[in-house]
Image 1: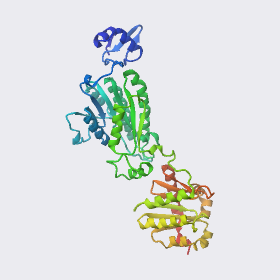
Image 2 (image 1 turned 30 degrees about the horizontal axis):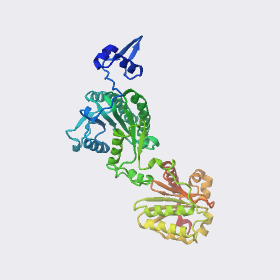
Image 3 (image 1 turned 120 degrees about the horizontal axis):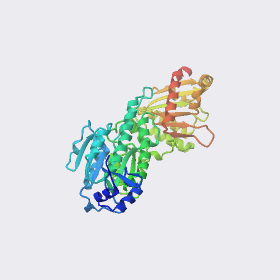
Image 4 (image 1 turned 45 degrees about the vertical axis):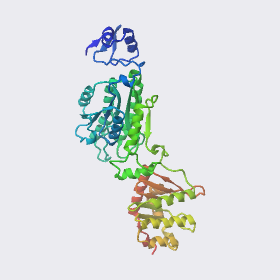
Length: 461
């Protein structure tokens, strides 16, 4: 590599030698190093931007924004905003993907790249000329994983796109930016939660959180460029029909998925406003992360708990599945108005087409006593509710680990909610959780109980 002396750089850039030495002493010229008393400045280094200068609109011929992932739903919405604001957009997209017709515009320059290949990314950067006003990285690589047949290539590919490509493009494009420029890396709230089926994606997003902070430390001082992130929550659109997306609504305080244009608005604001925000992440998730860490309510008294039971039973739709364990607590199956209303809601739900399987756990010797209960008789006479029995004494003897999960019993609704009973101590009746790990454990326990169960009618002949 060829190097310039301080004097040669001064003549080339039209900056005083004293100013260049000051920049060198503050590490403002990348790649420069000292041998003895002599500074060596890489010949291909761009002229440093003077942080003391503020550029007016008239001083900028073209306001250029680079968008990596322009063909995504959020990318297209962001591009609409940028064009309306008078920007010239350079869009990068994975080369084998089909470009939507709406992106063919005189003020959009499309560049196919291979995010898995460093050379094509470097080539794309080299072809971008002029001062860049902003850069947005929103390209993602997402693949569901099989824990029993793990694909290590897909794991590495996730990092190549989500982390390595982001790192390369930021480090190269920042050299072409001015003091008013800004970088936004689009992230996911998966960065803040573990993942059952996408460990590569989730951990890559977490890596980007740290990268944003690191970039802000280094490049704001070096080039005056702000670097921030927008962490997106569950977004509707292309995947709105996906069951997991629809079920996610129940874990979002706003009770809906986000819209691509909402995230695009947030990105635009981070690019062009928030001038004193740097190294930060704006979370745009409808309140999803603000839920309790365990995604559960506090322990609820009887009044609140029954109101929530009524809400869930009343809103659960045809085709949903309820899987329920009942431990026949002393305060169940009585004449309490709230309990009677709850029992009625069971039958209303199955009349709407909800599939219900209830497993009763009690000592077999009590069957004669319980079969006289009119509410038990009502369950037995229903042809829409599957009712089964497991001897609790047999569980104590042979499967005590299941009792630790069952405790006082619970109501599971599909794979997204668990309404959990608490011991009857006069203070709390139960709680509601949407914690995936707790639901998964309860569902597995229920499947084990099914294997051990017999029809309730068989016990209560």
